[in-house]
Image 1 (spheres, rainbow, N blue to C red):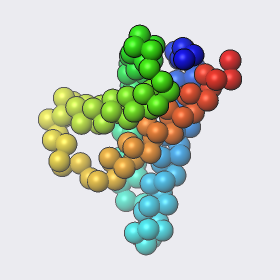
Image 2: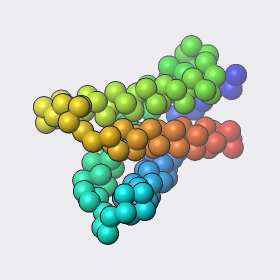
Image 3: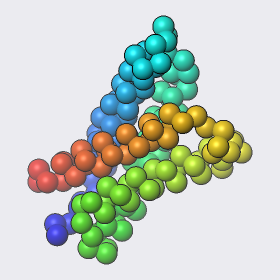
Length: 131
């Protein structure tokens, strides 16, 4: 198995692309699937998901890369660990910052987390294989 390297530029760019894709999915969800005339709570999803994504790419991704390399696991392990850690971030960070319980967060936040974490891990792995 080839080692996964941590580069902050790969991490930030991959997270940004995944975040944009996740936000576009949110817009499609609001406008077309729910048939709404405008995007509700778009700024909240836009800004807080950006903060969580930035935090994750700086703090969480190095830990994921280190864990994957230490235990010599596959790239699928990297994707699954990214998914698990993103759910931990979305569950713990709002509670630690605002005493906001996870069951008070809407369902789409968890779907958004799923989309962003999978897209991020695939793009990040793609950048790593280019070297």
